[in-house]
Amino acid sequence: MNYLASLPNAISGNEILVFSLDLIVSPELLSDCRDALSEDERIRAARFRVENVRDEFVAARGFLRGLLSRFTGVPPTDIRITLSPLGKPSASGGIAFNLSHSGHRAVFALTRATEVGVDLERFRIIVDWPRLARQFLCAEEWQALMELPPADQPRAFVTCWTRKEALSKASGIPLETVLRQVPVGYRPTQNGGFLIDDAGSGWMIEEVDIGSDFACSLAHRSAGAIVKVYNL
Image (cartoon, rainbow, N blue to C red):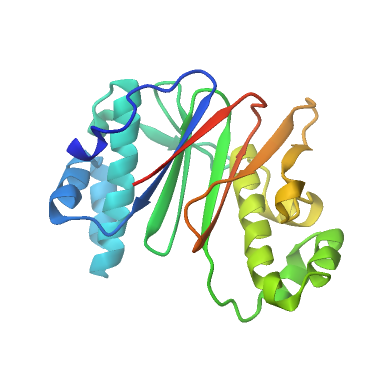
């Protein structure tokens, strides 16, 4: 895939690489992505009745396979992607990865250093966000949210939600548990480690700059990790 030629071709032991991609791609790139799919993914793609939804699925999965191939040396179609009982994806080659998409944009996080989770949400009008916040967030988060200026509250809610989604995806802890029991906040100064497992390891949550239209959060438990972001 020529589209990957300008990207790094290796991941060092302490790096987390985050790639952001617009899923509306050229016909040439879409063809390359389709060629990278496994047989199962091609069958899944064919089931989408809406063309743009199908094309975005092809672009996201094909680009993911291209990245994994670049960093493992395994041909894209030969990479075996499986899900754990907790729903966490994994692939051969010693690389942990996660992906998320919102609107027409997707993000991919890859690393050799740690389990990783990423979540992306486009800022948009969510009419019933107060009900969702009251129902699902920790009590202290709801209280702090209500203390913000009303104009800032919807954006803060979305930011908080992406942090919890990323943490759930990285740790394998059910989202409902993270939503109700693990406070993560939404102010930039509240980022940091969250001790949530019996082994005593802290999960770190970081904000990733994908652009002003999106909230993007990355969860990992590598205190010395170097996060590098590539907006494509």
